[in-house]
Amino acid sequence: MKLAVSVPQRGFTLIELLVVTAILAILAALLLPVLAIGKQKTAQLSCMNNHRQLTLAWQMYAADNQDQLLFASESLDPDKLWTAKYAWVTGTLNYDPNDPRNWDPALTIEKSPLWSYAGKNPTIWKCPADRSGVTVQGQLKPRVRSMSMNIFLGGWGGTDGNWGAPFSAYKIYRRLSELSDPGPAQTFVFLDMREDSIDMGNFATRMAGWPNAPEQYGFFDLPAFYHHRAAGFSFADGHSEIRRWRDPRTMPPLVANGFVPDLYSSANNPDVAWLQFRSTRPRTP
Image 1 (cartoon, rainbow, N blue to C red):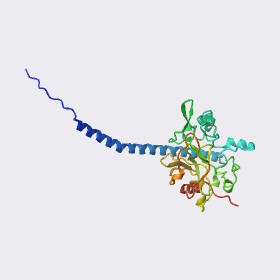
Image 2 (tube, rainbow, N blue to C red):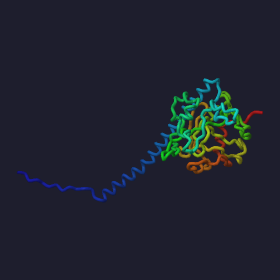
Image 3 (cartoon, rainbow, N blue to C red):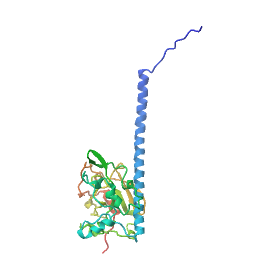
Image 4 (cartoon, one colour):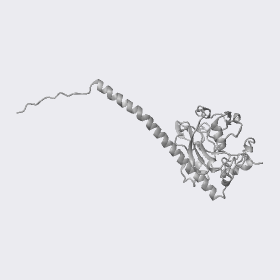
């Protein structure tokens, strides 16, 4: 008969456990930024793809309608309410829990002339990095869009919206073929707007100071900065890009469940100059 030999069991010492824990913490610290960057890049690619699809729909509409461009917003003049039928989107976003147009695509984007051209896909009207919403009976409902259109593409029902100068001094393009200056590749169509600035379907670049008086620069509306100080844009030639902002004044702190001012100065801001160059040109005498 063989005798059983007892083998002592050895566990990890406290020092060994601490070393392993430290190694895991170091690896996590190294990997988490990489994962965050990867997630950020995925959101950027998705955003640019949404922009491309929406701009392709915009181009196809013009091709099917004798080169006519949709309005960036409808006119609110009593004699021009018919323009809502030819606006790329109607309705005004806000934080009113009693206004379902904020979260129900059937009331706004599904009525857009672009709806069928865009494959009836509601997701392409929004940047995936936009997490804004309206709280309705304790539930956060995502808003239907984060994208707006360059106001100088169609204007308010084809007009300057009765704002006069400076809008009246600049071209409001009505046909795709009119975009020879600044050119389709240099004219933005859609951009991401920040949640506390987006309202109607348009983005109004403030043209004061263009091109040689930067001390007059400022904003009417503010672009988003969802992509680490950057926003998604699409252009009339069909390409899209992510624009990184250079001036902190382009990105003031968000106003939770509210709105930033519609008008404020930002002298010598290079981001304003970038937007102005890609928005429109002065009317010819």
